[in-house]
Image (cartoon, rainbow, N blue to C red; front, side, top):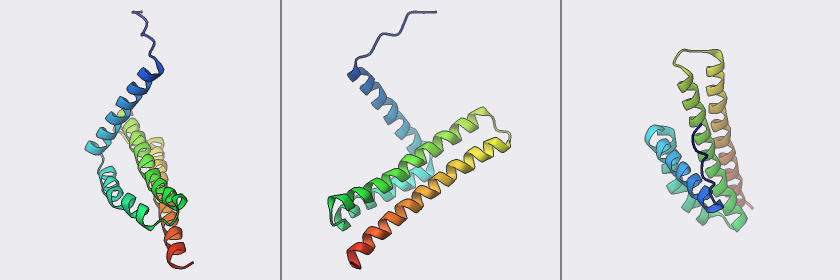
Length: 126
């Protein structure tokens, strides 16, 4: 069976998790055009959120609503990778999984658009 894995300290687990997370971000950047486009939008939207939000709560809503888009995109990419790993043949369940993940991305984008619209409307039409 081999030797047991050494127990990691809490800090060791945190460092390992951070490495996996960075590897995931690098993989998404390298392999996912949609993620790269959303990161490009992030470069514009985060500073814009800090400028147009009147309160820290509004700024947090604007920033988090867009970060949620990135999070859902990463989950979508993970689901697509797992489905593709299973096999290239078309299967109704594979298609459903990919479509559901894509729908989640669409809803996260709609949610972010709604938050941004409401905050901007409150700023210019009180």
